[in-house]
Every structure is written in C-alpha cells, then in structure tokens.
Image 1: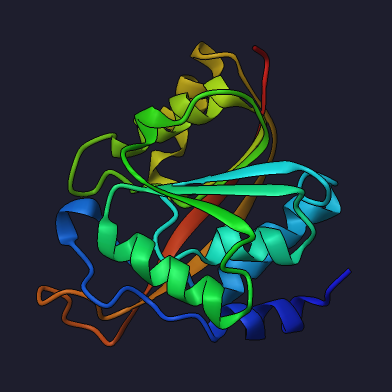
Image 2: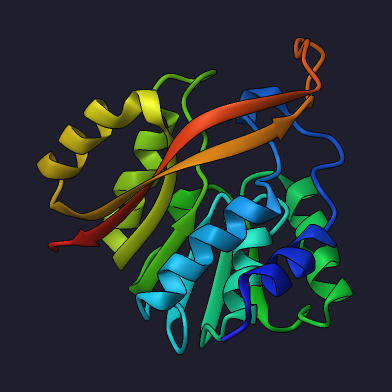
Length: 203
C-alpha cells in the first residue's frame, strides 16, 4: 500500500478551487485530511478493487486518491462545471484522465449501486442541512460511506443516520485546516473541528 506521506504529496500537487463559490460552500479539502480519510477507508478494504463514488467531488482529491489506492472504478459528480474542469485537469496531471468518470450534475442524477461513497459534502453553514441531501443519497446507493462533517452537527447527523437505515461503524475526530478563501475571512487560516463518519447502509 502507498504510504500516507506519498499520498499526501500526490494530492498536494493538485490544483485547488480557482473560483470558489460561497453559496456552494466550496473549499479544497487539505491533502493531509484527504489522505487520512482515504487511508482509513483503504485499510478497511473499502477502496481497493471496489466501485467508489465521490458526491460533490470538487477539484477531485478524494476521487483521484481513491484511484491511486486501487479502486476498481471511480465516479465523481459535482454541480459546478469549473470544479469538474479543474478535477479533470488534476487527473490529467497525474496521468489518470481516463481512469475516472466525471459527471457535471446535481447528485440526484446518480443511481445504481456502489461499494463505497467517499465525500466531503457542504457543511450546511450557508444552506441549512445541505449535508442532509448528500447523506441520504449516499445511504441509498452504497454499502459503505465515509463522510466528513462539522463536529457541531454530530447530534443531528447521528439521529438522521439512525432514522434512515444508517449504521455508524466508527467516528474519527479530525482537524480541517482551511486557508483564507472568501472576502469575509479575516484570518489567514482556520482550524475546523470535523468528524469522519463511517457508515454502513442497512438497505
């Protein structure tokens, strides 16, 4: 298996959002957090030789990282065309341009069955409970879900999962470092407490 530092270096080479949109709550997941999240899923045997989908893929770090870690098939979807274009260019920079199916659409278009969802959905700070749609979609299409959420939403999300056939198998507390991204950001860098929810769908 690729070492964590090697994966971090590969993901860190990928371009971030060039024009992040605040109403979509866009920011680039740090390479360290993406690598940690993906290696947890890989260690649990939920990425190698599996069909993986990234809902709200942004610039593609989780999708590309899943392919690096040996996923059989990777599908990535995002509603923002700029994000998808950047993600494709990022994949091309690592020679992975034909290895991932990129879809520019709302997540509602995704149907069928996948082994694993990896995602860093909107936290719902701009659009209340925006992450709800992503979790419900993930639970309807995949056996295993690895999803990153703001820690303050934990009680709400745990109830949502329980009410919608989601079994919480593990929860990892992480720190998300977000650089100054929008005009209203006054600090150079923000540390956000997040949870990685590892779920098994009961459906």
